[in-house]
Image (cartoon, rainbow, N blue to C red):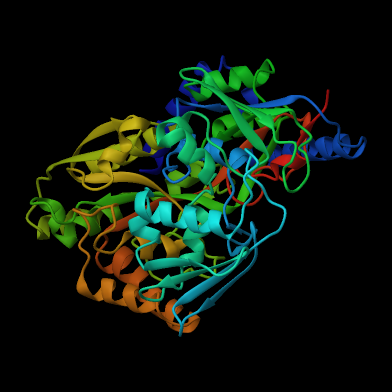
Length: 535
């Protein structure tokens, strides 16, 4: 099977290089050589950055693959939206480099489990891009509006009872039950919007010209072309160096790479595309991987619909037939851009649980299928969102499952239609679960009854649901103990979820662009007001 993976990977690399004009024989360079070139390129870039002071002016252009579905802060979710949002919006809390939420638009954030309250104090001197002050009333408006209308309100706001304004700067969130992970949800989602702009423009008008507290303000959205911004001169952390950060539509990685090479783009984001990243690094571009894992690419089983997948032995057989180690070695440059894991956390994470996993064992997989009454195999659909990495992985898995007699049909879903699959799907959904807010938060938000994701497909067994419910109302020690057991149930015992790759977000950056720690912590995020560009 390792030979099969290598052959499929070779075909993928050839196709990628052909699409990019065969620009780089260096993409086949050894890992050691690539690392040396990376170090040299990084040293060169650092030297250039330190040889001159930041300059003001200019623009940075970033690609998106299509029009965002929405720019309403309370609805932001898909890849194109999360590329645009960090330049124009901010959140009350933000993740530090280790993935722990810290006050951002707030001076302080304090939880009181006995009183079932979270108290937050807003920083002074922050205004929205329309001049509206960020005060306690604006924070309450946002939290209330998100609870009523937010795309992930069922996941992250289900225990919010009401929001109280105490004084001009102080807000108290009253919980119906304790939620020890509420801060993780606030840091991941709930982009803070100007209440004035929403009320004056209406939700549809606000969608076209959104107003946040971020360093760049949307000036126009030319549908089918791009989204254009200008620097917000009164930004609370200081006027940005750049005049604008723009987001232009380039539908494929190949067209994005070509645009980078002629100077039409300055930053492009990749997920699991080692071929392009290695090639561009060798050609002098700066490569930055996020310290916080971006996504956990996961086989999500419909374990409830009539058919073979209702039998845990079939799900175990599929796990045993998928060679994740070889897939990640081949597609992610031997761990440079991501790794395999038994769960939605890497081994260095404080949320990692020591579970056995399944490894790769074709004969055992065949035996389990026979034991389950499927010695001759069966037909299976794997659904995945359009993307080069996802397609490559799913093609490899299609071939691997064919080795044990399972005939796989691949269903590629366009980004705009992907949300329609999140509640229920046929067979398996290959899902890039966002991991910026950590494993525990994602499990607590998504693996309970009432959550949108997998609402009709996951088992939601009494034990795991009970443990999740207990964990989020408990102290840290109980939280870790209970969630470790939940991880074992979901990923090991029930095999409802089977991770293929844990991927770090990768940014390819024009060497003339400096500052702002682009993509250094959370994927696609930066201190945008500190980013500058050589003339």
